[in-house]
Image: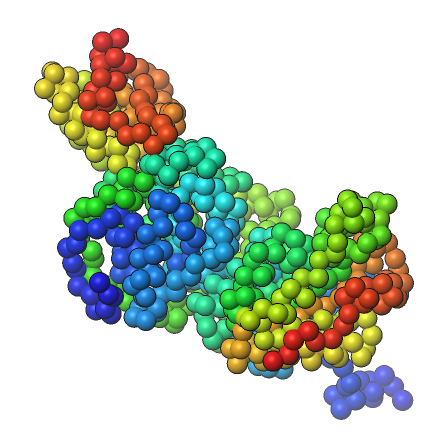
Length: 253
Length: 367
């Protein structure tokens, strides 16, 4: 059998979502962003929301998310994505507005905007990529960096007496009356990828139904920043991060 | 007083801060995002009391901070809507990051600064000490805002449409730089008739660049101020500078009073220019002939008008509620070809017309 006999539409088991641009991503090999982008593109496309979705990208590695997913985007200042999304959502109530934020963006510089947008119950989706490090700037400590974890600014490991405790921002958002769905997922195995996709879909469906704020945290790897191979990073994440950031729904109304 | 969808022109007695709240609704503004700070909290209070979301559909939101408020404005502007914020000096400092992003992303918006005294927490009393911040950029990077300085409550109202229209015409943020006096004083004011808000379709047509969803599967729009490739970033900067040059050529505004027959010029902006009008009368009774130039756009600055008016004059007095800020632009305008002196009070103190005349005499006439 020739290759051309196999490459037929009826034999297709997988295809890249149309909303994912045909460009090289700047993300490092092994990074979780690529998978999460793909899932977002699939969910937006499958829900038929291409014409009314606006993404708000952060400062951090995902600053260039607007180069990859073929919807309208606004690139926000560091930490301000929930405020930017608030206005777009209120001014275009039939649009589905989501933020895509890293741990520094969401849980350090943007803590106030994150908590207040969620507490107001803004009709937005917050996608929170928690890889416990500042990737874009070269691997400095994040609010979610684990105790003992080495980073460029905690070269001997994070210490409670010097750096305080890791911040579980998602746990802070779950009890707020404005949130309708708060979940923590991962993309390190095919099963986890499927669960994350289901979570994103639910979050976007909530936005369509105008149910308030949905938060999807994705515990992620930054193998470059962690100075590990992609495989080792996945293992390290499962062994270390899931204890502090356990997977599953924190709130599902 | 409530808002009706078809309001006609109306004459009212109002504070500047209340009047501008009415004016933005009547302009057809789509959204206001603000945070309380004295001496301008009446803007947000008035908007909340008028509930425009029930009539015109305008969004009004009290944000968690000035930082959040300006980023809401950034988001709203990025989506093509006519949006605004207001604050006073310390709050405007907090907004500078967002203002710089809007300048960089070429977004239209209205920012109102009802100035109070600084530095730091300063005072809640009136001041004009944010001239440098407003006219020289304010945040990081090479940019300018269109800056309008109202001297009356009527101008607070009239400048709303002007600021929004210029902002959309040139795709750059505008600032109304008022001071605590204009914000707090009551005057007779003519409110314009209600203009309908643009429909979403009109917004899409007028702002084909805006990010509000790819309706009709159009090409995606991306609003950003980021460009890591230096050559591209230089191009973007050149484009911004070209816009600023067009604004300078076409949008410089000022008021002149008796400049031709005068021996001395007073240059003053905002509320203090009105005190100078009275000072001019007092000076003339003493035989000192004074003309006044009141810059209306502080940026672009009416340099040529001042240069022209200064020809053959004996001196210029810049009267400002600060330690001497606009005087730098006046000196540049006249190339220091004649004496240019500054008179100002600080800390929220407003000089009387007599004090202005005394300053004119001591610094220039009797020098």
